[in-house]
Length: 231
Image (cartoon, rainbow, N blue to C red; front, side, top):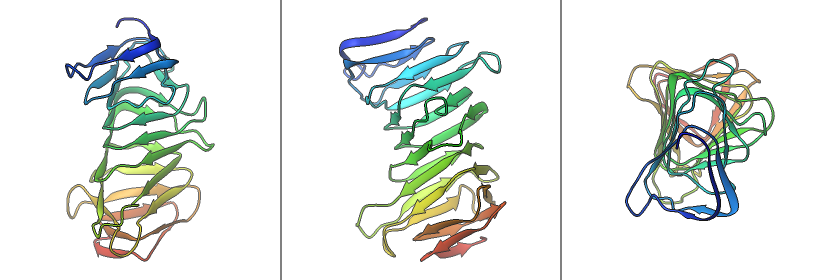
C-alpha cells in the first residue's frame, strides 16, 4: 500500500495465506475492524511521518523502515501498540511519546543504527511480556518492564546485546516470580558486557540471575538474585 490503509469494518486476513503487508502511509483500525493475526510481518516503509492506530488489535511482527529525513521520519502511535512477535526499528523514530502510550512486545526488540525510540518522560513504558526475549542494538527507553509470572520451576531468558548500552530514563522494572522462576538476565556473548544506564536514580530489581552486566549513572540493587559471573 503506497498510501494509507483504513479498516473501518471487516477482518483483514493475511493469516490464511501467510501474506505480509507493507504500508507507506498511515494505519487506521476502526472499532468494527480487525486483523486476523497469524505470523505475518507488517512493514511501515514511508518517507514521511506515519501514524498507527491499532484500536487494541495486535500485530505479529512489525518492521519500521521509515526513510524520511530527520524530523519527518516519525512513526507516531495514536494508541497502545501490542506486538505478539518481534519488533525491528531499522530506520525512523518510533514515537509513543506524543500520545503517552505503551508498547507491549512478546518477542525480540531490535534497534537498527538508523532507528530510534522517542521515549518521552511520562508514563510511556515498553513492556516485555513474552518468554525468552532479547534486546539488540542500543535504545533509550523511558520505562522498561519485564516480569516472570509463570510458576513452572524454570527461568526465562532476557538476553541483551553484548557491548550495547540500554539507557532507562525512568523506571527499570525486572522481577522474577521466586527463587525457582527467575529472569535470566545475560549478555548475548559470554564475557562481553552490556550496560543498563539508569539516569533517574537507583533502581531495584528482584529474583534474577545476572551475567555480564554493568550499571552506569546510578546503582541497580538486585534483591533475591544470583550473580553468575562478570557483574
